[in-house]
Image (tube, one colour):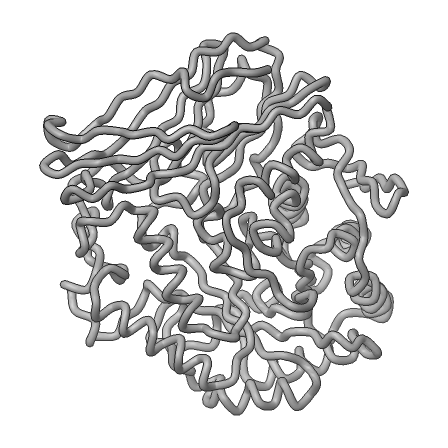
Length: 499
């Protein structure tokens, strides 16, 4: 399972005729830098192809552009027609190899792998149009390859993630506590958050590391959009943060920075796509200043954690589950600044948020995995779990925890999402298993519930919080055979869950 990195064919696809766009590659052992240069031409895509003969029964695992949607898993090569964003692992169960790009690339890179070989599709557009590089020599990505003489795919992928990662920021302590979304679904109040905080404090009694109480979408004037000011049910967000802290917890808050109804944000400051100008354009100087002021206000209120959401959807108009080899639709729209690639624009937005947040912890939700490394402390790695439907938690939560666990403590802390407890909607024997797995996973642990939970549930959560604040060894064992692994090795013991 080996191939020569420098033996590829290449193609540059431009918006107009390619008059001067060209590629340069600089090779090192098992990796190479790929540069793009252009002045008059407006490049859109680069395609690289390596000829390679592979057994059709080879198993292949890819990643996702942003969150996963319960669909990560190994597939036979002959059944693989999917785009493989950022990297992939291939195995014949006796040996494996990984191929991908390092984090913080300046382009969106995905792979196709079939019986004829490997193709890298490199999206260098600005919006849906070609990028205006204006003679800039741009490092698109650093490609990297590793071969493993073992069928242990989990350890191989963990090692490869470490090799791909250029930068990381991790919290100083384990992050856990309450998030109100999966019982409230937008219907909450100042008083309810105080009640939730008291519950979290009681459930974590005796643990030096204090829990967070995260206020999700519900506190602002408009549902799921700005301005980021409190509604009449919340009134004073600084007072609320102070009271959460006084009770013995740490305040966290949710925002959606690119969706804002403030009339001061003119049409010129918005992305023009599909006949509308709805979402803020982060390349516009005044939008950047507005985003900074929003974050500074939240920081001044005393929140210690900020979860920013929806940026991929708001920037590009699709969910990750709707995307294939390109990050957005093929269209003539572009950002205010036409000289940056979409990947550069995303990275600059994340850096703006991270730098302004300063000492606040950052959770990225609906964020681009490979571009967020080093710019978020935690990443929501899968689509929403549920307080209403166990099938959704099983599909989204278990899948993303198993297949993105190699990212944990490497790119960021992997947040596989909450244990949602909404009265009797989900049998406790199911949710209890999800709670147990999360508590041993070394990943963040958030519970979404009110103080109406019964004594058994309280006891189980208390024990989970105790276990969570210790370190454990963990890996899924049946990862080659299912999308929702049931057999896990935890601290040297084999645990079987019945999802």
